[in-house]
Image 1 (cartoon, helix red, strand yellow):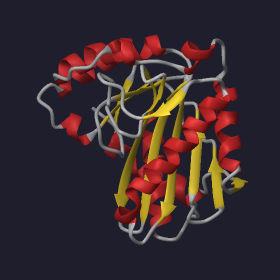
Image 2 (cartoon, rainbow, N blue to C red):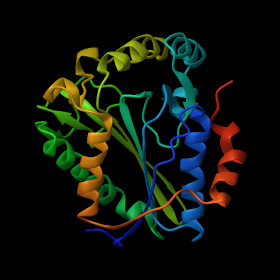
Image 3 (tube, rainbow, N blue to C red):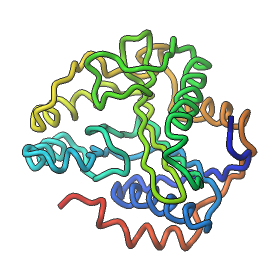
Image 4 (cartoon, one colour):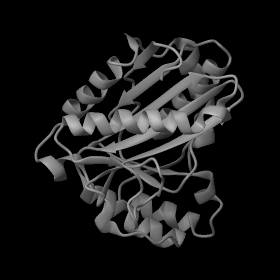
Length: 252
């Protein structure tokens, strides 16, 4: 069940500035925690990003992985959530969802379950045989991934908790599973991570031609069943904070 039925919706993408996009998600989280912003759901079409976790950044092969990512045409960033490296590109949707919570760790599983069910339902509406759960051999493995037929990963999810709020993030691969493989094969090799490239799928690969906009509409329709939505851009104070935080998420 939703903790509150009011939710601000933002569409800013910062597609040409990947680190700023990640910093914006963090800025929203911090301001939600302080009570300076309402719960905020951001859904947008990103640029080509290789999102590394802090765990990746501590790996011996990180610098080689960064070089591989850039050689494949993807800009590396340090993301908010944990896990392992994941790919964003123009055929994907990037989702970030920040909510206030005085005891965020107590509801970690409930938040994962809500997000995964929302995205599973939306993909089912598009005709995908969608299920929640990890596919053996998937990249950035997680119990709350959304897959097709138990065979290919379509959605990865993650969380970041701070005092007073929780962030949920997801990447939905609508088209371009080949781009995911092109970016991750050399990157995961550099990081020393095993995975099966055949598990990287897309919505289009399951149901035929589908636009990113149509996938976004399906997600928003399911979200509107659960929440009272207010379309609103990010406020000036949040944007200013994102600018100050950008360097924390950029990779030299």
